[in-house]
Image (cartoon, rainbow, N blue to C red):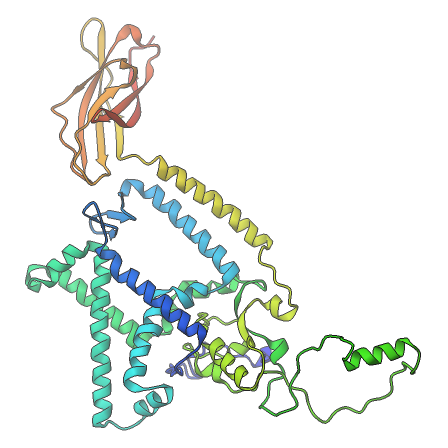
Length: 498
């Protein structure tokens, strides 16, 4: 690895003047790249297919921020479930922290939509139209010709078409497939808001994948900048084995580190040790002339790992901000190791301690602590979701009002109520007092509560004066529908001073 004093103080895609260095990564190939391709196909199928999945006529997943309508795995959530959202986000953050402490940026290389679209969609199209890295570089640096104009036009046209497709899918997660179809099947004049949103999303995706590219991962994404505080020497990373690879140098036969030989009976070291033990020869070491041949590590400094990197780094410099764990360098290095008849794994998934001391420890104190917190949060989430009702009921005494005398034996209190229907069906409800301690008189009639809507109104509670134990008495208002109690709200009933 390079000396700390000589190491760069800027990201790999910026030169000394602050100008961006355009990356031309060589097309990768190998077992990890093939595996990532299959994973990306599966994830893209899920991403493009989920908006069309419906449960009881409703989307399986929907994040409609404009109408405050959220559906996750077929379960409808409302703004009244905000506490569940906060707890779920907290649980997700703890999971991300735990996952990163153990596996580093594995998510970035295998699952992140930015990496999948950039490396498995747009980059492959670029290779298909313009060729590999050297061909792209020659094309960009060369003069404008008919061939260059055709290739550039076709590439940008395909990029725009894919960006339009992604924008439609993205918008489907926000407003639903049916609404997106209404936008695209009618004139923009019928829905200027939807049309403008579609154009804006298309432009954003095109800019990200055609121009911004790896800068999203290195300068914008906050997750990448957290690696310095989340990872440690036991974190599994895409790592260069500096113990085995250094000192690096060009390939020369006969001057490479060989694999350690076991001390078998035929091993020369074993024979010498046995002779010394028998006292046949003197064990006093004699001066040995230093061999003129310098033993080198397995790294032949071919720089292929640098050429395939989509963020332009040299993985041999150690853990770096820009590394997204795409494994391209692993495949490139394994290919070279096969050619020079050396074991694979000079660059591999491993921890710093695994490389330096061959000791790999996953269950550290940090991991155990994060795991305990995560399990507790998951349990709390499960309990709250299990007890989540289909109604959200709020009952409050009307402010500024005391009790009213109904007759010689009864008094009443006036209350305001709000009932929010969390389901996707209209519901008819009835208000009752627990234990029949009194009578509820509605002001007007109880309306049918529309799906995902709120109704509000007022009612009186009448109670016998002699049944009141204190000036303030606890009462429970129950909400019933179709013969089942679905919710309840607690409040106070005020009576005369006793």
